[in-house]
Image (cartoon, rainbow, N blue to C red; front, side):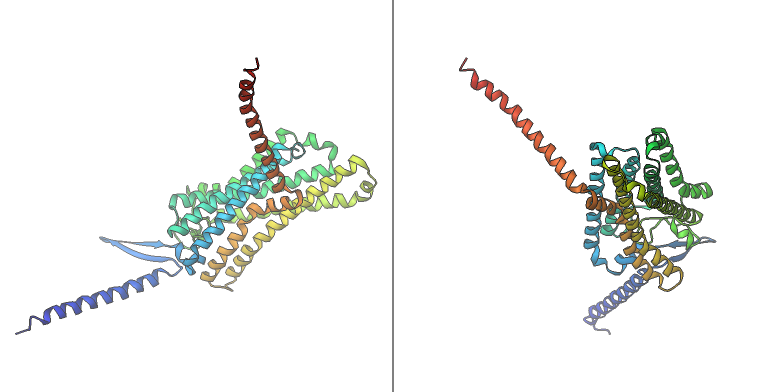
Length: 388
């Protein structure tokens, strides 16, 4: 007969062993699930077997390698967002308040600043949310973000190309500048930029009736997930190719127009050096504006270079997909700094930060001084009543 005292010990051994096996299986599943790759599962319902492909961006990129960096990554994104809002806000404030900044071509500069603000607002808050929660807000938002990211990027490039054309007209045809830059023509140009920016996402919608995500290039299914938690949702397929081609055309237009500007300045250097007074000052200001725009364009191209290099290395199979996504995260954050680097250039060359803060401080001080004067009027009246 079995000793009853041994039953609890046997039961305890079985339970402990079951728990150990369950822990091992759980850890094994976590390790498998943590791989940065597509996971395909076959689901059978009756006589029908369906393959379901999933992808978890939390296992990829910088966050996938070092989840403990989440607070630091979130802080960097918040600083970028605040800087972009402040820098572009300063530029918009000065254009709206200073007469010398209200020349017709600066409407594209205003639109460019608003586009930069929209880009950082579409990217940074969502990325911080994803880093904190370990997942994106949802499939629907991913598709909306993919649409907005492609649209705003393309719109920004063509706004900058339009600004280059305005600078060229200002220098090459100074006497006809005001007539050429009429409100009607500016609005038509702005509308053209807007429609060009809509082209790439509309290609996908016209092709399949929805905006497919980036995974259409890698997998045979459409998964609304970003590459990693630190990269905005994008799309693949023909619409991705169209977007790249449109961006290249916009950049070429900017570079060609910049070359024409400096060619005109070089050809007319001898004639303009003889100018004196207001004419000479105006020509120097125009060249300074063109040089500032050239610096901004150069800085933006530099911020795009890491992403281009990482993409080429990945296509050449020089680095693995996991390492490529790690560097994609870093290069994408560098690229997003273009939303505030233009304000840094203007701060260096035009002191927009100091001028804006000075103007706002002066207005606030005058407001409180005026308020203090209004509050002191009744007191003076009361003091004079006894004398009467």
